[in-house]
Length: 460
Image (cartoon, rainbow, N blue to C red; front, side, top):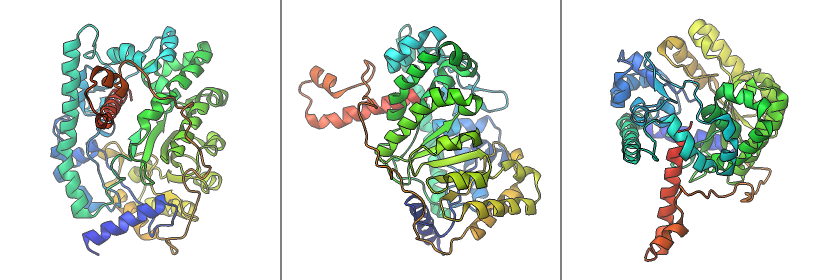
């Protein structure tokens, strides 16, 4: 099979999988992080983050060693790389380069506990006026507008340059290895659960833990107020069955079930139902151990992709396998600590549990961060075993429950359009520029959406 035929076969497997048809092979995506690739290439862990083209040789070499259907690495984005120059140009206190070469997220608060009323009244304006200047010291638009403008523009240029420096080796990988290239453009996005957004960047873990007791009603109202922000931030421009709205779930496993049920879950469930109404699949990363919440997960829209870190594979399969797509559960720690045979035996155990009836993507409980997190020989062996063993006898047969089988309908009364003084809108632009023809409207709306996304991406 030549490279083109291999890519066509891989694309068919992923397309079948996301359209509820059994693929020929269990989809296999062995994604390696940039730091691990740099370590493999014996590179300085600071230098490569200022020139991602340096990863070309080691990533091509790893691609020759490790079998994977999806690309072994992807171009730089803000979320998958945390490129340090961008954060440094912004004067970030939320994401800071550590002495170990990793950009870290210290526990910082961008919102005071007496400011819930302001957040609820106009969430995006509050973020722009209060949260952004606190989390990014160089973005004080009120007191230092020129410095803020310079910092924002140069930071975005920096992010674009980092992405473009990684694009050539990504395209080379796709061409040489025949990888599945990923979801179509405009169909893959990112967002957070409304409660998690408030906890992560606004109040911090310790702050939100106190607010659950001290500001319970305000916290519930705030989650409802920011829900449209999270929805429109995550809504794909081009929804597609192979695309997804990725959202890692941070807080639930640290909460009492009563608090989770009352404060966290309602807005999250509503948001996912509205995504489903737009034919946008959600890719949910259930961080930590979600076994006590399986009944709640069962209430989410059909066709949601649930990625699990820890848990009992059989219980998850039995409870959720008919309605959802499932990924993960292989312990990455075994790759480092186990023998080759132990690693292969574990892969067989998980495939024997998760493959019947379809709907499983092979994946680890978490991706390795460093080369020391894995035994590369074991990692290679598991990938080869999954490819050879994870084969269906009846490809093309229907399985599971398709996306939005419940028939959710989008409701603008629930997801109210965003109206704020800081976002462009066609009516305001047209009133100031009456000679602008109506054909300019899509461009104004596109620019407004891009600005909104850039700001929201700073808060995750």
